[in-house]
Image (cartoon, rainbow, N blue to C red; front, side):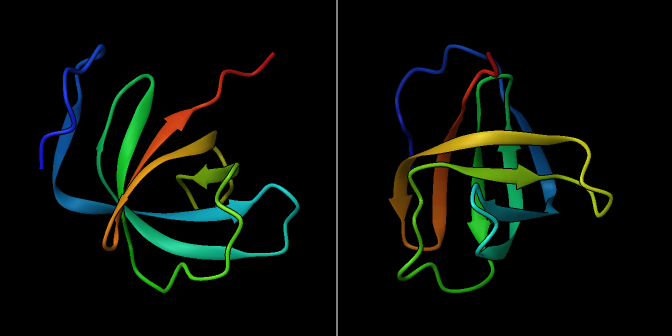
Length: 90
């Protein structure tokens, strides 16, 4: 699926990179895989159900140690694939 013009070049991974989504309030987490990423966003493949979760804002944690991470906002959902925009820290 094409999502339109990209402002930043994306790095596509041959194999999904394991990551975790965590709610900003810490009440939920879900495993996912990073399919591609850029300086401003990413395409993620969810590994578990998303129903009932608050996807307004959440953290994408890229390593088991918790660093690096990015604060994200949901942009689109296509089945188990979601697009996220990184929220700049102020």
